[in-house]
Length: 239
Image (cartoon, rainbow, N blue to C red; front, side, top):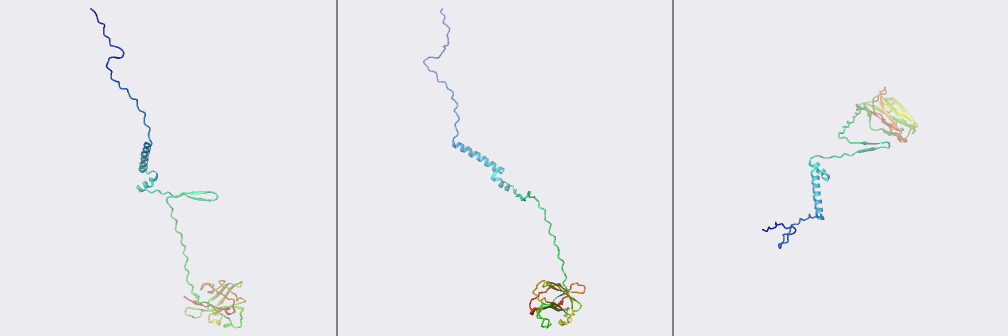
């Protein structure tokens, strides 16, 4: 009995007439594509949009003032004042609260009571030849009279002439009524060699026996003219 040798599976490549189907070969991963110019621009636009959105939400950059106004808050930046000197420079920082400046103290000037006597009209100038002929043009005469509220003469007051005239100091007194040439309360000052031009240097005032003023002092203007070497000044009571 013949024995068949055990069958063996063929080894090696199958060589029958039928062809085997092709096996799938795994594909290699393709390298990433490079970003083009359009993709770069698009990415920058997205990034810029995000930055703009954050600036708008948090009030950064140019939107800081708008954000402050939206919340009703105002930001005030005060300047710094710098005072310079030769030795040192001092910087003064502004303060939030200014101290009130005290109001100046006003000193009231006491109201002076009006004097009981004043001048009756304006002083009158004329030549001395009309009332005192023979004295000449070298003599200055200041004369007049004193009247009360009823235009009656007052004889118990004193006329004071003082100041400076022609380089000389003048300080003379005459009693009203001592020179009747000008009336019952007439007075007269005779100043030799003092017919000179002057203004606001010689004064006349009515006082009592204790030198208490009964009128304010009045300036007497004099002239260097013979036709004006006599000046008539009358006092009149007003209260």
